[in-house]
Length: 217
Image: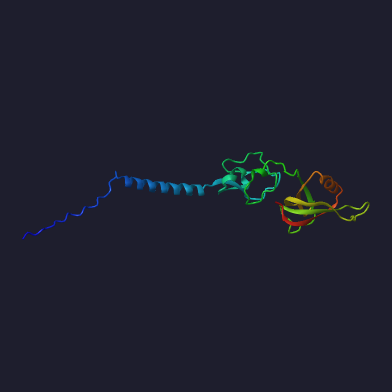
């Protein structure tokens, strides 16, 4: 009696893909593309530019000098052209046309030496200290008491300036006379100049009062 014997064929072994295998090439290209995309995205997100930052308050009309600026790297994107970058030193004739506070970026619109509101800085000497609330950039009212004729007394004070911006404050140089006080610089329009000049010329008693409402923008 014949017995049928079935011989099983040996299992086919899996071969490692070679360098010429299309599937391996496609996989490598996909990995390279993914890595390149991530690097491009990170590079775009971390794109910064060196710009100038005021290291101290810069008053209107004050010269912009490198000694009064710091350099920081910030991401500005589409507004980059609106600020003074540190790719080159500021020009020698560059001046501020408004107050630039310490720690602020330097907007190009704040440079040029001419105030957009056509105000002019006027220095006023004060024999008494300013209120604590008054600082550079705040708004103040100015009252003047005219000296009475043929008398050492003063007339009723009148308000000469209302909510004007303070652009600078410094201590009055006492010298050898021992005179104390402060000099406050105010931004005054041409319309307000005559009254202030008259008060100063006639040695009126001037008083600066904090106007409230926060600092000037």
